[in-house]
Structures are given as C-alpha cells and as structure tokens.
Length: 259
Ligand code: ADP
Ligand code: MG
Image 1 (tube, helix red, strand yellow):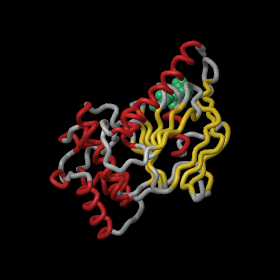
Image 2 (spheres, protein in one colour):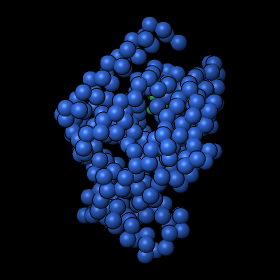
Image 3 (cartoon, rainbow, N blue to C red):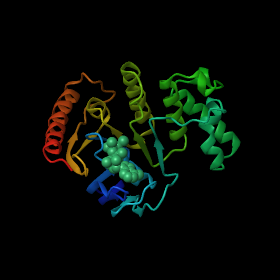
Image 4 (spheres, rainbow, N blue to C red):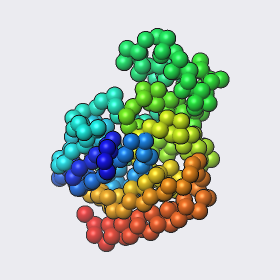
C-alpha cells in the first residue's frame, strides 16, 4: 500500500518466562492506510494485546518492526495514542481537566487548549458533564471521556484494545455508533482490537482475523459499505459469518494441537 500510515513488518514476539518461553506472535505483516479503520479479531490469547503494545511501543519486537510514516517505532510516542478497556482517567480531576491533561503536558497554549477540549467534549456528547467528577459517570461515559482525551491530541493513529468489552451490550452498541461518528468527523487512522466478531465487522473497513497463538494474520476481510453501520446491515452480517467460520477453524486447530 503506497503511503501507508502504519506498517507492520514480519513482526514477532516471544516472552521469556520462568515456565519457558511463550511465543505470542509470529510473522505479522499488515499495512494500514491513512484514515483507515482496521479491526483485529482473534481467539482469546492469540496475541491481540501484544500486537497493539508493539505498535504503541510499549513492548519491543523479537522479530521484525513497526513503521509510522516511514519511521521505525522504538518506544511510545504522541503520534500513537492508546485507549484501553479501563479508561484509566484521573479520579481527582473533572471531565474537562481529564480531556485537557495531555494538551497541557504537550504545552499547547491555554486558549487553543480550551477550544479544542470544548470541541471534543461536545463531540462525545458530554457537554452537560464538563465539570462532573469521574466517579459520577457511567462506564459508557467514562469511555467517551477516554476517547475525547485520546482524539483531542490528534494522534496519527488511534489504538484501541477492547475498549468496550466491560460494557453492557446496549451501551456497547451505542459506543459503536459514537466511534463511527468520531471517525467520520476526524478521519483518524484506527487500529481496533476486539474478541467480538460482530463489533469487528460493524467497525472495520478491513477486518483482520488472527490465527490461534502464536498469532499471525489468517485472513483480511474488506467492507466498504457506507457508515454508520449496524450489526444488522447485510454486508456486516456477511462479514460476521465469514469471520466466524475462520475463527472456528482456528480454534478447532488449536484444540487439536495443544501447545
Ligand atoms: P490476547 O490479547 O489476544 O488475548 P495477549 O496478547 O494478551 O492475547 O497474550 C498472548 C500470549 O502472550 C498469551 O499466552 C499471554 O499469556 C502471553 N503474554 C502476554 N503478555 C505477556 C508478558 N508480559 N509476559 C509473558 N507472557 C505474556
Ligand atoms: Mg487482550
């Protein structure tokens, strides 16, 4: 892919451990274009979080490398922002101060900071909760703050690791609408990890299905149907069916070949 924002090349990761080495990933190759939304789905323990940590620069690869805009990643950077399952907000700060935090650290001038923070709080529909404390918010609202806090930094790539896994089904579907809306407005290149096939199919321009551990790219599905999409759109249903078929084969293989 010409002009890929993110390039993952022959990436592998083996963890050392007291009970022996664990190979989490092997030979992962993937290119993500600017403004593309790529979802990664795979069996539990196949190395999804490891892959995201390597892209974030939180872990070092054993083989291969990650490139951002042609530069090799060798640690965390402001160009790659991560949103985890636990929003990890500062409980002693209100919503506004949480969203503003990274901009302050980056030394963005006060006027610009305030305007950007207000814009993103509005974008996640929390304008009536600007001065609310974190403990006053529901799980879904906390994840909205987490999204605003990440996007306000205008990262080159947004990395999400099962951000909605702890939410109720209904809230989760609401968040899938929010994420698509944010993406339509900001066109941020996104790598979104989930073990939920339906979520992967709703959100992804491309859906990368990983194999059993050690994880590698098994299949890449494409869905260019217009957004916002829901789990009942025909193209989404078709992707769910295909991805489930591949995942089932991966899990069956893993069951028959225990490590
Ligand atoms: P997933 O997110 O797909 O469930 P992970 O990337 O968390 O999978 O883990 C993949 C494999 O690597 C698992 O077997 C896990 O136990 C192992 N693993 C992950 N992180 C570490 C670590 N820091 N040290 C040792 N093993 C790890
Ligand atoms: Mg994980």
